[in-house]
Length: 96
Image (cartoon, rainbow, N blue to C red; front, side):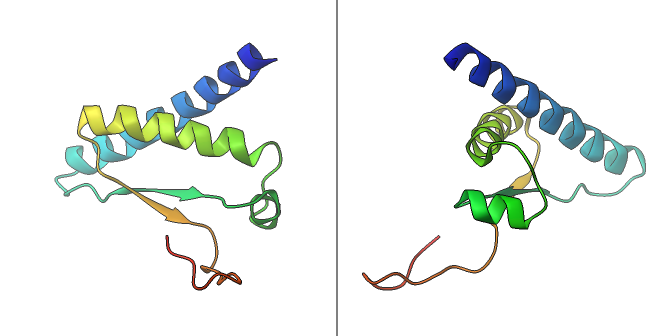
């Protein structure tokens, strides 16, 4: 079970990395400064489904973590934002 999850995470992160590197390479080949590649992190399964995705939001988040680690090593600029607004809890405001 755990090996299958890691395989999914690795496959998804490989796609994210490939697409990010391609976006940066295209910008550079066109003489443009590459913009940071945006990634979205999900707080809950409901947020993930609301964004129109299927599958595991936790696998997606793990794939993003793995991808940005590799992209950082490659010098590819990126941003990570949370999906949706920050919600306050009974303990006070939430912070990203």
